[in-house]
Length: 65
Picture (cartoon, one colour):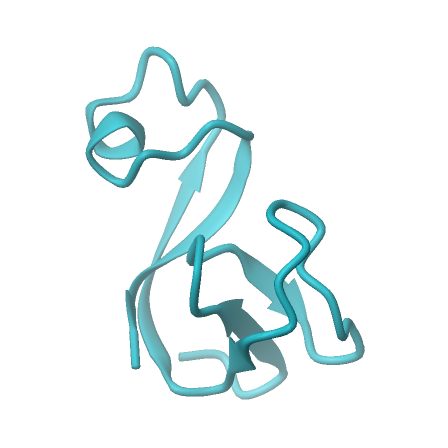
């Protein structure tokens, strides 16, 4: 886990520590307690992206607590 990053509890998007609202799903439920990191460039073609129900390209945490 990168200590200067947050993850959204709703969509698992990885954000900078200074962000207060998730730009992907507009949630304010953010946490520092996450692990695993995946970058999804083409969610419609990615098996992991489809499994995680990702619709927007970006960086995502695999596990969020």
